Length: 238
Image 1 (spheres, rainbow, N blue to C red):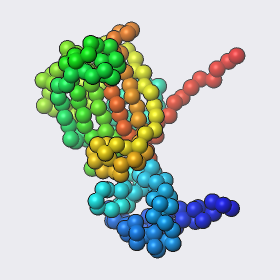
Image 2: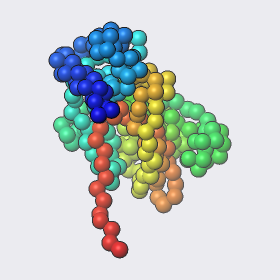
Image 3: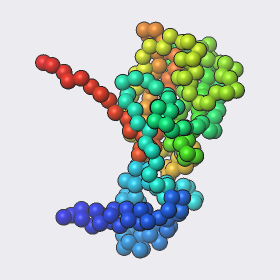
Image 4: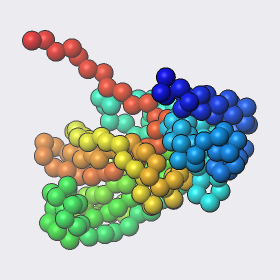
């Protein structure tokens, strides 16, 4: 019974969101907290569940908007595929925006992840992935310049480094990813039009060509609620 007031608050918010047309702004936090007779901190905590479902979006300096339920990009993790491939299989389309391709020098972290000397020239590819104009993911790939130069990417490049490498015929073999939940940094919050500290699903992955050569280290950040990742596993036998 101790959680009943909070559950009632979530029910009230659910009804409000359901009645509000997509794209319309909800009342401000102070006003909404007064209407529902709760503190702003309690209200913010209750609203996080609706953010992770993709039903509302908080935009810094603008307020909270109802976005409605969008088609979820659904895919298993047993086979590495680009977001474009997964979306296309479901009859959806995603686009890349804020594309940046630049040369940097490997710091200690990237040198260790790529297995290259410190200060090696690397190509970094950053972009925001959008579904129906909504930012849903932020992707960063870094590769040794000797493996991928910025000028190698064609003018028609749509944002998927994986698809480009596969089309080029690279002998890619396996990807190893660490998956975690993190709070959005200021940079990620700005790129994804969310609030700093909002929860994101984070993949840090090494892509291999051959048995031991790392050719790409990527960091991918996904807004929960817009993706349904799953793993199909066989049952082990003793």
